[in-house]
Amino acid sequence: MTESEFLTLAENCISQVENIFELAFERDELDVECKRSGNVLEVEFVNNGSKIIINSQAPMQEMWMAAKSGGFHYKYDGASWRNTRDQTEFFDTLAKLAKQQAAA
Image 1 (spheres, helix red, strand yellow):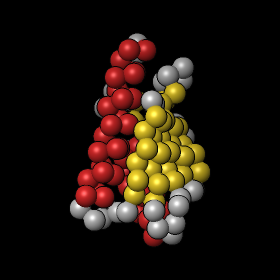
Image 2: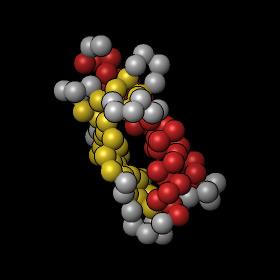
Image 3: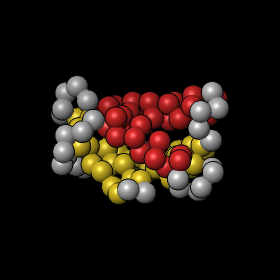
Image 4: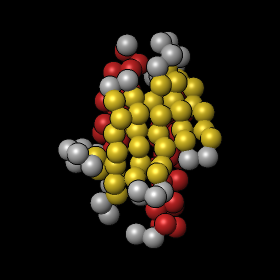
């Protein structure tokens, strides 16, 4: 994959995450604040101050996710972003982590 292709996919991923959390906030499903700076998206859970941070790493062509439970790296497999260790899907993991952190 070219750098340009990666940057497009990464931007789409970060925008999708931001839209998911903003919609959840609008629907009163989650009390979160999203802050975006370039290729870094910070999602703060207002009730407890915990954060999930998503960012792209162009040199490695990976998406990185950091949460209370740890850090995770994802590579695009042609259809979805997959964890480089256990092959779990990015958005499945994001949903689980958001649920955990919102409850904490």
